[in-house]
Amino acid sequence: MYMYNTMQCAFCKNPSTLSICEYFVLQAAVLLSVLLHFFKPKYIHNLLKTSEQRKKEYERRVERKVQKEREAEAGQFDDSEKFVTSAYKKKMQEMQEEEERERRQEALEGM
Image (cartoon, rainbow, N blue to C red):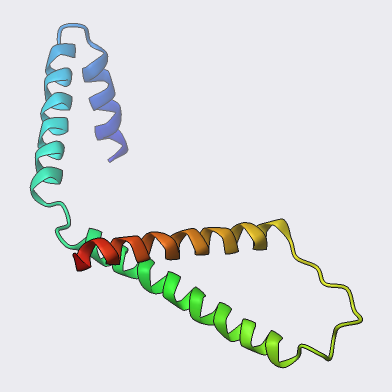
């Protein structure tokens, strides 16, 4: 295998045979692009979209569960400090915006 690679490199370094190497490289690129065009995954886009929706629904369920736990513990920890990170605030804001978009989308689909 090593000998083949060195022979191939020597073959391509020869100026008279450079056009042959270029031809084979171009043919390989064309073949690859054609194969990728015809054998692209058909359903992966829908699977990824569904997975993303399920992930968001799971996060909402967990957040609702945590919120209920906080409400149940409402009087126990009133004297202690509460810490909310900026990342958590950002995540909550994004979740609210996403829920708003979904409501608008459902309203449009319902018409």
